[in-house]
Length: 129
Length: 141
Image 1 (tube, each protein chain N blue to C red):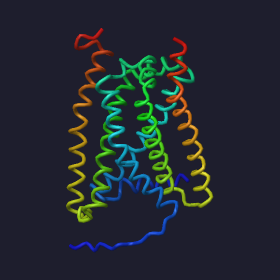
Image 2 (tube, rainbow over the protein chains, first blue to last red):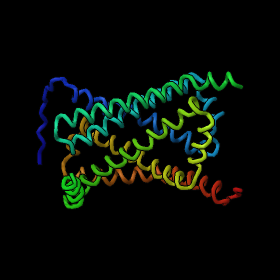
Image 3 (tube, rainbow over the protein chains, first blue to last red):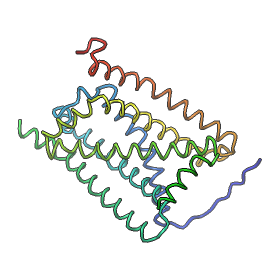
């Protein structure tokens, strides 16, 4: 069996960009997520994690940047994946639009909550000590 | 609506796409499972800023036996989703011949084996912590 490889020029559109985003974010996510799990779940463990531990991590700019990257890449990748899966089962254009907007709002909302916490938690909690 | 949901499930069980179908399904299910956890995890970790007292409750829940078992499963989801994603991207970009039926089927098994091999030590450590802290084994209280 032979496979013919064709070079196809695809016009950029929204879905094309979204698809590429899934690939590129995936490459970034493998080290980001795996290292996060290795540290927090395996080397440290949930029984050693508490408020002080998180505040200490978020008082370091390096870990703040790391967690912001993790948050942005992982949640965007996941929410776009959810949208792609739902589009396999939703066929009406208007329902797809409504779903896409609901996912977009949930994504913006939860990402903002997470980002505010990462940026501001250490300042607030260290000031209290 | 009910009819279409029924079609989804009967389709998944009846279509005999073997390894390709199974890895497609696993990729979706592990992705959705991870996303569900991630959404909860972002919000409860944000309690550190918005409601520090509630964060203690959240950590308490994470230390419970059902959550710890769930986390061990979550680690497998993340590993499989990542390894399978690498396989897909690698074939697409560098080795389209990998998508021929026989090598594609074989690659699914390699993906499963690599995921399990990466998962076992993680599951071992997390299982040890679970038994140590929640069941008093290995010198735990």
